[in-house]
Length: 205
Image (cartoon, rainbow, N blue to C red; front, side):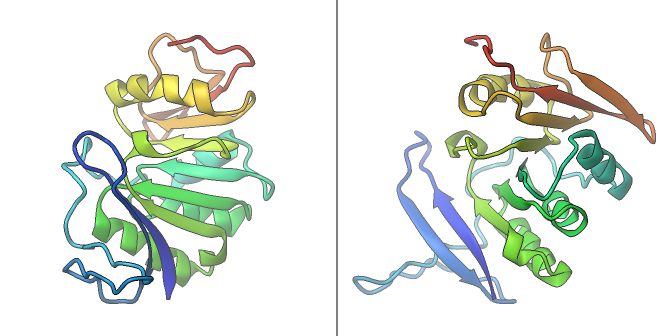
């Protein structure tokens, strides 16, 4: 068994429920109302909302290059925003040993990510949160990985600047951050990955 933290939000973005869900190999398909004093199981078959991006898995060689570009070590806390099947959290935990947190909006993929971490033997160093990116707190991250879209990167950029500590590394697959110039960029099999560090005095927007 493995653990997923489930966070649900209404359209206005205000949290209405937080549940700790112990997932077995079967994904529950109906919301259950628990007796007083017990936790509720949130419907794991219904997406929280329509995803902003189509799921496209990052190739293993790109995952490895992103982690190397960020210079990930066992002392890091790696947040993967839009975690898909959990492959970045799993790869980081297996090769470098940091704690990883994956955030995804698709219930079945998030459950699958937790299962993949367990299969790989890194579930003790990984957590997967079912929820929207803009409702999560990233402040403990020392490395953030992204495979979103340019417009989402730009929308997310002020939140990263506000919440992350100076020096935190941000690595993006394929999409840049507009006029925030990367510290490094690298071609990997025909795609580009980018590295930034959060500045000591980031812009206000």
